[in-house]
Length: 222
Image (cartoon, rainbow, N blue to C red; front, side, top):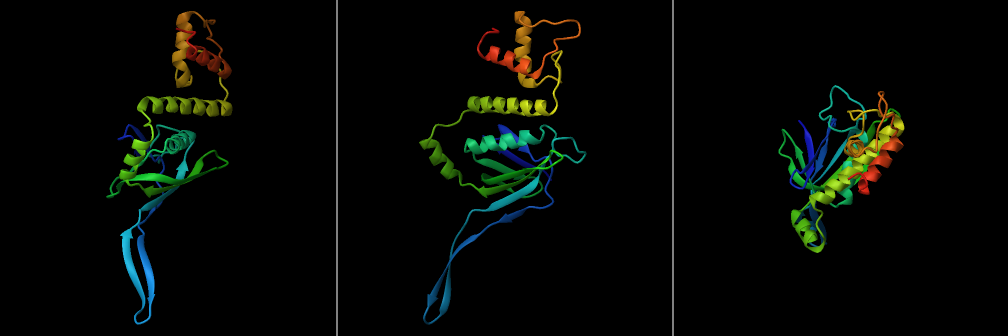
């Protein structure tokens, strides 16, 4: 079994890394009760209400052998869900090996930081009527994929900042140790002749990477 959350027709997918031990689906029913003189209480059955589901587990900051997904670490999952919430995006929930495949919206997202760094969370989802989303799309400007990718870049940058504060490093070469968000800008700086070093490398600190990235964004490394 796996749990997937996705937006924009699976253009962006989140796979739950640690499966919850259980989850409960609620499907309430609208009812009204009337008091009558001759027959006592009578119940009027209305339409079904929206389904809801609550998922509680944790986002790991390190590798565990039982992880269902290793593409991201703790805070990256949080930032992705926060971005979807901020963009007011409906989410597709799929739980494999079950009939569950439904459009949902985030009703509440709570997380707690444990002393070991793992992020324990509860994600409350509620069934979403896509007719409502079509109405909202007509009333508001749509978020295109270019804007979403820019937001993802910002999230990646923030994740790199958090990881660096926890584990300060020196960057001598463009390799897997260098944050991915900085590699293109550093390569441009090398090509431009702005960046040079000794045989031992560049000895760049995190703040140096930030400066190089901002120079690139200003168009000074073109």
